[in-house]
Length: 355
Ligand code: SF4
Image 1 (tube, rainbow, N blue to C red):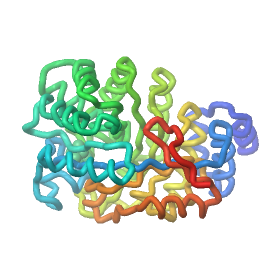
Image 2: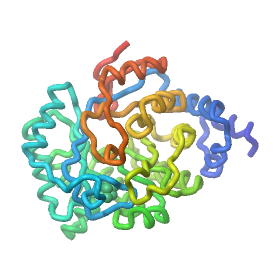
Image 3: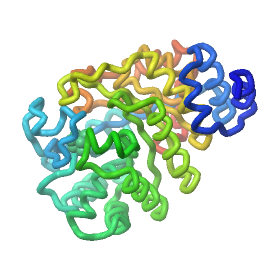
Image 4: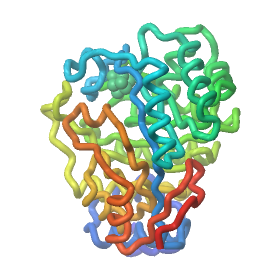
């Protein structure tokens, strides 16, 4: 297929193949951005850009997975081991609620000592104090870990988390290519297991998202393979509310020798993600990992959401990346891109528009 006919196919809204997506890495950035922005308008025609006031609470950094790309887990040596108490967690949620926040992300690792019951009690405790807060918490890898630990099915874990008050589960997908997973996170769930969790969440009426961590030594074809897995599972379930790519930050990890992904890499993956994932409405710009200025540019490359105004985050911070953003800074960032800022809830419904 010529570049001209591929461009025509993209503008017509036709689903593109993995081979066509791979060819897009050779396009120059302005042409790719225009094509992606066109595709964004097909599914998100207005000029609003959403953000959510939320808080990531990294309740523990004790983790059995010991992923080579992680500087957060206790044995990574960057942060001493810790477990937060329920009281500490509740105090953090209280701060969030008082600041007008609507969503909490409880995120830890594959805890070596905590059974499923501890996770359930944590969720129940948050919901007992704050019944209106949305718990977008835990991860597919934790669900697989807990199912193995309790010798029960993934469905059982998902059902119990839901009954305890968990509303949705972040995708935390890393890179869904087993060759890469075996090298960088061999103790974490496989691609097939990740898919099984998404399908289980679907059976239980819960939503999720898909992330993508690239720059782990994968090929460009493997980046597209990740997108293919996401698109196919979304075709079957429709529960992925957003796609959130971010680059791996090698500093302070076992993979520090890997080259750091560039801004061009990031903008291309945002644009190609928008064009390829024709069944995912929201593409999130990752200010947390890419910085505010690059995230702002991503709004011209197919992104239509800025994610959370995080009031606390430790996993990315452990790699040395600064992770502060205020609501006012977020609003002016979106306005600066010529778009309309909208505070949204976890379902991507408008709470307040800052026209
Ligand atoms: S990335 Fe998550 S699962 Fe892997 S070592 Fe870090 S905390 Fe554990």
